[in-house]
Structures are given as structure tokens and as C-alpha cells.
Length: 252
Image 1 (spheres, rainbow, N blue to C red):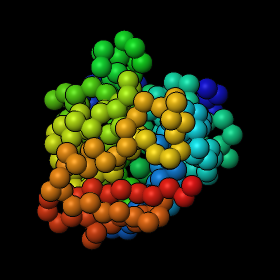
Image 2: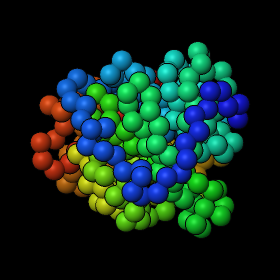
Image 3: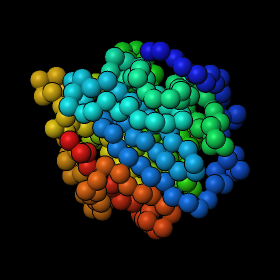
């Protein structure tokens, strides 16, 4: 991976990495979220554009378009083969790929280390969960988390307004049952499923399942289905109580 303008952040402990109230005090405005396939999303708000997990189309992502969009900061959860593909991104974005606390355009971004497999990280190493507030919305993107959330990790992640959670299984991320447990642990207002099989997959090389099984397990939770790859989130359209699931569409 070519590391351009990489921000290095020390892996701080629990006390030093907790968000302050001031860091979370951004209120008002709205957040535009565009799904670019798999676990890749573009977040626009507060005069900032943050891209999470650009990938190289291969296997489960073979028929997605390369997510080469303009952004000021790029957050990478892992750097395995097709993951964390930053080559060819336009401009000179800041590439952030390690756990730690960072500042970008007055937005505080926190990377939290978790395991990228079910063997304590021995097979696929570390996954970085990203947490930040943009447009007045508290965001947690779990990347390719595969292990149960520990108490310390739960404290660091807080309660998200919007949680991006992998649900398709495979060796490197939550299966539907594990995803349900993660959702219960973090209790977000809005859940956006990621990392599941779609028509973009090369079926012979993809070990993910569709989103349907996760939705079945979350029966009773309202499901919002967007006809577009882009949604707008603000405090007014988040569930006032309880939880909802947001399923997004991809323009194949």
C-alpha cells in the first residue's frame, strides 16, 4: 500500500483515547452518506469528505466499481489484498490506518483496534473500528470486525447514532448471528449492514451470505430501504426511540 500523507497516531490507552464532551459537541447540520460497495462509504458534512475502506474489486467485490472518489481523509480498517486500496484516489487525501486519535478539519477521529478474525487476530491481524462525529451525527464503522466486542472497546465506541456493521460472515467479519450480538452491545439508533453478498460478487470466490439472514434475525426492528446509494441523516430523521435498520442500494 502506498502511504501518502499518512497520519501516525499513537495507540493510546482507555483513559487518553476517550472522547471529550467538547469533541462530541458538534450539533446541527446533516450528514450525506454514499455507499460505494462492500464496507466502503463516503461521508460528507461539516465541509468535510471522509472516505472509509476503499477496495480493489475482486472476489466478493468483483463487479463493484473502484471507489475512486474525492475525499479529504481516508480511513482504512485493514490492508489485506483487496482491502485498503488507496492507489489512484484523486487529490492528496490524508490516509489514516492505525488505531489512535486524530484531528481532521476540526473533526476528532478515533481508531479502535479489534480482531479481524476469530483466532485473536492470529490469521488476519488487526481491524480498526472508526468512530467520529460529523454533521452532528455520532458514527461508528466496525470495518471487518470478527471478534466479540470487549468491555473496553464498548466504552471507547460509545453509543452510536449510526452503526455500520458487517453481517455477511466469512473468515474476516461477523456472520449474521455475531452481527446481531454486536448491535445489541452498542444499541445504536440506526444500523447500516455492510460486508454481505450482492450481485457484485464472483460467486465462485465469495464466501459471504446476503443481508436477508441478518434482517430475519432482527425481526421486529423497522427496516428502511433506500432506492439510492446515498442517504441524508440528521437528528430529525433518526428514530426518536428504539432502533431502525437502513438498507442501501447500489447503482450497478
